[in-house]
Length: 373
Ligand SMILES: *Cc1c(COP(=O)(O)O)cnc(C)c1O
Image (cartoon, rainbow, N blue to C red; front, side, top):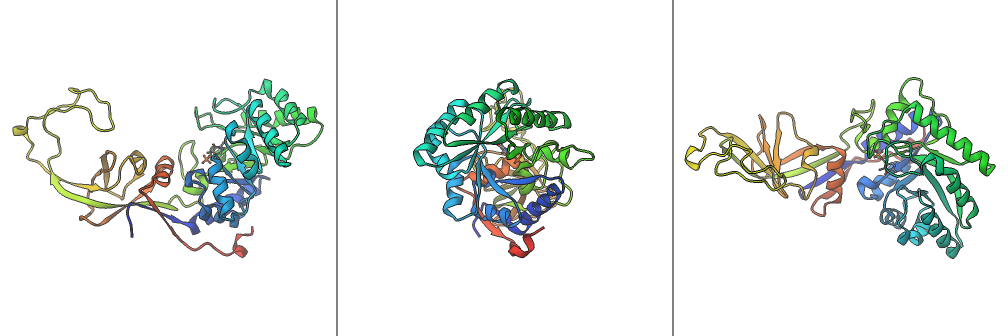
């Protein structure tokens, strides 16, 4: 099989998605399955839908268009505020988009009117993480604008925490979102359809003891389904597989070498360490000690090497664009053999995005009968 490649186990993904749908359903919360880390893969998207995920979300309209072309059942939410230049594509392919700017909503309205369509708008509220969102004090004005525009409908409110500044979802900020729902509903005179409380970082809060979900009825989950972890402390979530994805690389060199470099030392390919900060050795002072070093044909162009978890006993010593240097420990990795790595979120995103990394689907997805629950 070709290397490097990501092996993705659809049965494990199905299990993760189904497990989260069941646990959150018990709290009155449905799941938007987020596919951006896998570039809107139709295989992953269809698996999520088969597992009971209510709808799909992606940050890029290209991915949503691709899923639609592949026949994946929606509905689809664009979870990044649309670029005004893409308003027409957004209205054409996304049922819902998350929004923070009046100018963008106006562009969506114009595009929807042109297409004789209705596009649903969720307004994102800034609750402290300082990424996207309307400040609470400005929310009502934008909500009333959406109400007044043709072609767009105010579908609900949402927020996103943890991604930019690490703000942790809590009873306090989630209660603030519920309060804002009440304020907007009183102003528009009807009930909002969707209150999207956040991403995988909301899980420790919502699955914890005594959490009060209030009006929150949706979470947008990517990492928790794909990697079985919550992003706040990156701890595994009970009952989920953390190894649905594996990155496989091929060994291209295996030699016993001195443990220290020699010659005058300057900067390395991916570090900005100033020359002279590291000890160099004269070639004649080359150390006589030696250890096995394994080079895998993988690098910064394929993944985030810092986000790789190597096999037990093995250590990543460093990486450049296309060489990953390992201390194999007790393992035997001859030239031509394969080394398997578990991935963190950043490593997965980059591997899925690299044109050099193939994706191989494994694991049978249970039939539709098994997806109910
Ligand atoms: C990426 C993203 C998500 C999903 O985040 P995970 O941590 O992968 O669950 C949800 N909402 C928004 C707005 C996002 O950008």
